[in-house]
View 1 (tube, rainbow, N blue to C red):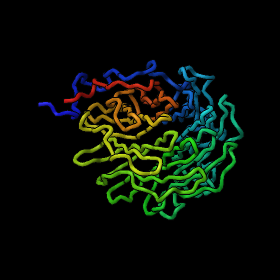
View 2: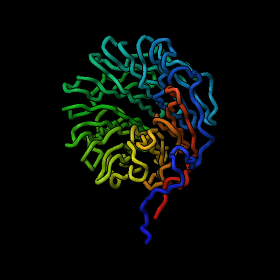
View 3: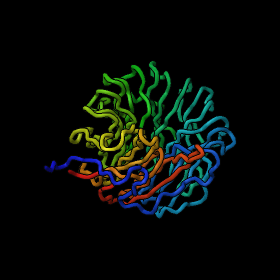
View 4: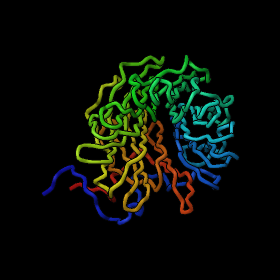
Length: 413
């Protein structure tokens, strides 16, 4: 008997990494980093409206002292533009956890965490660039409060180049970690002071993600231990002036078990989508999504992007999501397979209506870095791939907007 819409595993390959990626890839996976000694990992990616993109990552001992942040620009064809470049000027101790955002013209800003540079544990620093790759001014410190740790920054840019940076700050809101932000004009000048994002301050609020629409309105999401069972995903909307739009809100409907690693993307009109990993009713290790209108009203219910019971047992890790200007979106994540002890990166594409365009499909082997798309939906996924010698390198793969359903892993019974 046929049951419409139920996904089942199709055993066409015994080892998941042997499955051929489907969809509409624009060429195969390619290595992003040129310098290969040591490890290159934790990549992030941003695209301008035309599909030119920039990738940043952490590279071990390349700048002479622990980790440093490096980048590589690419044309919309996927061809490298110029050589890879060092982002951080200050090279003592470690710089990592980098994030990047681009405006519509290709000007971009990189932010990262730097150890001991602000005088206390770690701080958040940034560097602005013109679309040509030329630095715009010196690197700058983002956080004003410097006690303890300021870490895990996220950054978003509106089309004109105005920027908002968010990060986790230890002890600043009086209770473990809290989420803070700082706005900047397209000239690089700060707009007001740093501001708290989370209203609920008990326990820890951390690992923020941020997205901006075409007018500079933005939304921040983070994980917080406030939904009554482990971690939950929460968010706060803002106008372009930095004024909060309504109260903070819980994103996950199902609250039993942890809901972690939330990521957010916005279309040009301000409609946005959040993706995260967490537990669900009767299942574990799911990838979820929730769509919202520009007003902040939920569009339909939270939905399952992928489920552990469809694959071999695994543990979903960091999620990433990107949206084109019309609201079509791509969710990407990494999974750890318990049987083969390997990481794999997967993605799934959706129409602006929330209807799936594809089933989950394999992107490549490794740990999730990020995904970015241009205004028409061409997407770029980046990840770090662990080699046999224990070192890692950064890889990327480009996709056209249309992704046919992947039948290597999924079927409909």
